[in-house]
Length: 504
Image (cartoon, rainbow, N blue to C red; front, top):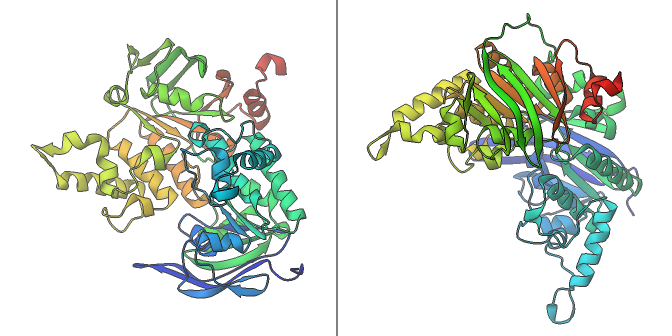
């Protein structure tokens, strides 16, 4: 049995190189039985690469892995699982066409005689795990029919199928509701009590300081230090991560707004949202805040022509318009940076230039040929304007950090010269340094005369970037706040379904 003073896991001197890149440079890391050890760093710092080495997805060029004090070779994820190491991926690794149960026990389906799958046992065991996670769906459901949040719960359920020594949670709450987060944190507490070592990767500092016992920071593929959580603070951790402190306050004179660019009157898309009315002016940032499922994303999709409204009207420059598809929205000067940049905002295997110019390829053609010079000029302009870090336009979008991927998507739509820019969850899965850059960019865009709508599930984000905040609950607007009057209390009350008159 592993003694409490012996680390459940040790990574010593791990080096991992890719062509032209030293992703990990002699990194040390350990996790003890019954502790939560947070692993932090900017996008591209090496966190996920280190965990993929641990899970057997990558083989290190140098260094060694110790489990329970003994050196082990982990050549693939099956061997990692056999050693009691479970990685819950940031990017979902499910098979959409299979049931939740088949995904939970993928590769380890219970069998009867002649190798036949024991479906009764499979569903019984899977449903027991889902009940433990307080999921409201059955194991028999096909994963493709589940929401992203429920798919994440299936990913988490996999960790509970084995007698794990170490469980790695990589951004586990990115798609979860607040209620689901509470269940996840309870599961982590249970695993700790059982002596399981937890590695927790997240960009959300409140979670890190709530859950973790220690914090290790990586920067540029190198180990920067380990801190006891109780003895440190967010500013010290941030300095280790990015080499500087961040000023997250707003220092600006009250902005002067121009004319109303977009107005929505009694817009409905039953049953997702109803009777939505608001406006946004040139130079203004309007933040939409609410719980997952409040209807915010669905409003954005309707404004961009991805959904058809069942009632109400949309006005652009004071004129009623019909937006039946994204092409119509783009023609009216409306652009949408979607919530899921990897599935909806980018073609990951394409290079940065082609992603940037994708919506306007038809305008860049001469006969049957696309003008390479025009494409490169557009890319260079927005790479410089948005400070996108990539060695070349030829770089595949798949290898960029989350922050730079998001800038590619924003640049793609800015190059279309929109008047209204809708940005859905602009910093989801992005490190604290890139998050600050995106926030500054949104404020700069407003100052340049854009009308900006920001949808976010993070209260500090909407408070920092918005001039007005629209609070939503269950498909309805509960209250609208000017930034000078809003408080955390009245914002929380509004997104919880409490009306202003009820508070009074």
